[in-house]
Image (cartoon, rainbow, N blue to C red; front, side, top):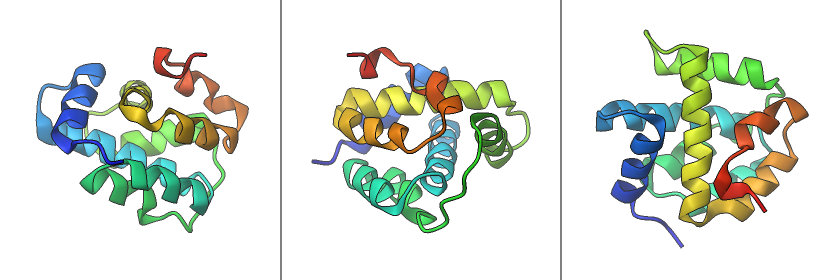
Length: 133
């Protein structure tokens, strides 16, 4: 079941504190692109099916890469990919907002499986009310 793109982007923008839709899209896409590189292909595919349009495409774009990295390396890479003016602290907010938004829109089971494939250092990025329980 796919989620309406506009609804998910509005929710993400609100959670991330980003008012501009283009900026919100870039943040979500770069976060998902980087996440897709960090998890096994099967998990990227399972999450990609759950996400609409460019979001699903982003998580599966480099799914065969599977690069192991720490959470700190992950957020630095997300910040770099988002571009000038985005700090690693911003990337943490964007990552948590992405995870919370996906969970709130029905992707919590897929996110739990994704989380199982990541190092413990990712735990704080997955601590959202939507994944509690």
